[in-house]
Amino acid sequence: MDAAEWSSLDADGQYRLILWAVSRTSKTRPLLGEESAGFLWGLPLPNTPSMVDVLVPQGSGRRSGNGVRRIVRPDVGPCAEIGGFAVTGKI
Image (cartoon, rainbow, N blue to C red; front, side, top):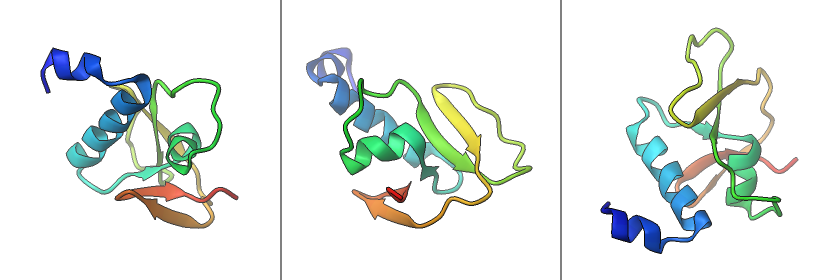
């Protein structure tokens, strides 16, 4: 995407595009959680998130970086799909 298109998007549009990019470039389908899931659920957040929150299994060896925060959560509870994204439930 060129800079003019990017700057024409509001913060939510830019974040949604970042979520899409992370999802498309991941080796396995990411499970979005925390603020990223809340954003996709449409929950009220004080600001558009700045990081993509991805839940990873214990001992995955994956580290946070490049705008992606990897969070180890052994029990994620129910999951759902929103707009093609795998997300944790609202519970």
